[in-house]
View: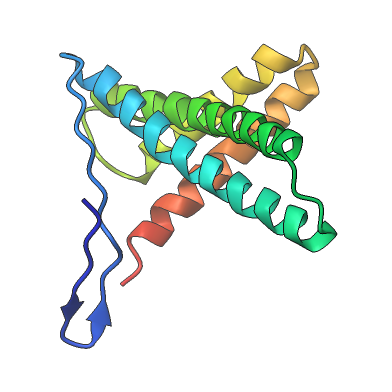
Length: 147
């Protein structure tokens, strides 16, 4: 259940915890990331599509149907990317036996390469997507620890 609180002078962000136990920590991390980030993408798309419908003044059942399909596509895509990343990072952490920013970097690079390879056979693009995935994951990890 979402919750937030005031702690002194700082406001904490809402915490949303959905626990799905698949009996395997790797699957638990992957499914958790898929559901959380997929939901974020679906809500983002719903907000965008609602804005466009209101802006254009064209609201219809067909528009709602198209918006729903787009929400599902975006949610599935973002969720898949997040799930692959979370799984890769968890796997790297288990192999290395350490929990640090390097896991995020390697997990992001592996996820970027894997997702790129699934949609393209261009070697240069796969390498660039691996570099981008590693950079974004590392930056996100560093941002998580800013106080």
